[in-house]
Length: 251
Image: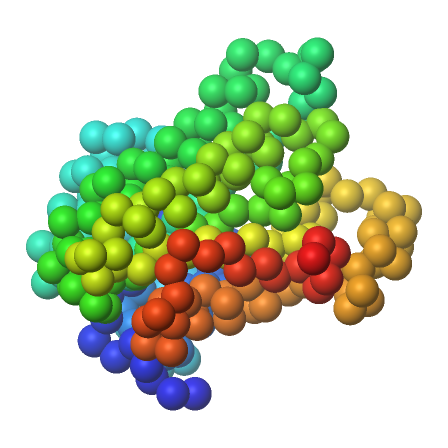
C-alpha cells in the first residue's frame, strides 16, 4: 500500500473500536502517526495502538472526552506539542440515542447533541490552529450518517446531531479553504459493528440486506478506505462534500 501520509499526524476520535479502529489502522498503513482517542476502554485503545504498530505504523493512545470542551482543548494542545503538529483530524466518536420524539427525555437530546455534534465542534475548534499550520496537508473528515439525509424513525436526537455535522462540514469547508484545509464528511449506511449489531435484531438483518443494492452490509474497512482517501493527496481538490458509503441504500 502506498504510504501517502508519511510524516503526517492524525487524530482519530473514538478510535478504540468499530469504524474508528479501522480508520486508525488505514491511516497508519499509509504512513501517518495515529493518535488513538478513547474515553473509557484503555485496553481496547492499547490494542489498536499495538495493531497499528504491528502493521508497520506508529500510534499512541490519548484519553479525553470529546464532549468536554476544556479537556479537548488541553488534549489537542498536548498532542500538537508532543508530535510537532497535527495534519489530519477525523471526528469519528459518536453514540446512538434511540427514542421516539413523544417519549424522548431531555437527557436523550442533550446526550446525542453533546457527543455527536458538540464533540465534533469542540475537536475541530481546538485543532484548527495546528491544521492551518499544516497548510495544504490540513484535513478534517467528519463522520455523519445515512440517517442525516434520509431520517430515521425513533432516532430524532441522533439524526439532528448528524445532520448538524453535515452543516458544519460545509461551513468549515467555506471558512478554511483559503488556509488550505479541506473539510469533508463520510456518511456510512449500515455498517457491521458491535454498536449496530446490538441494535438490529437478526430477523430484521435479512430484510435490511435485501434493501441494499450491493447485497451486503458494510464493513468498517469500507468506511476507513473512504476516510483514508479524503485524508490523502488524491483528495486535495475535494472539499465540502459528503461521501456516501452505503452500498446504494441511499442514492
